[in-house]
Length: 88
Image (cartoon, rainbow, N blue to C red; front, side, top):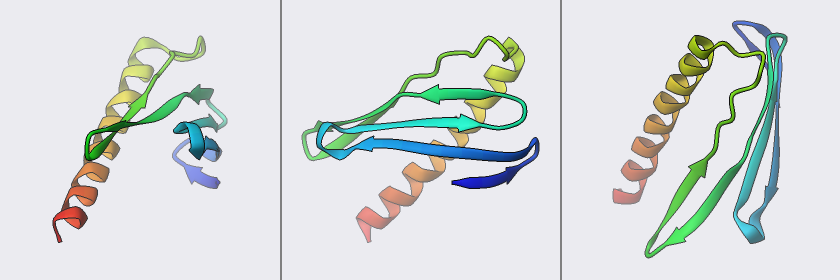
């Protein structure tokens, strides 16, 4: 996906392999570029979603921590939406 962010134009590329629960993605904007491995794992009647973040050399600790906090907010909202739809 191409998008506009506070840092300018950005691109998100998803590299999915559904058969193995792989949902890796690459993010690239004018300020930084990083890859985030992600996996979906069956767990009883549900699924666990696991993302691993490696801090790119270009990211300061402060900037990296800020990005992780933004992801936490987005994932909390996604969880809320999915749980609301599942109970409907």
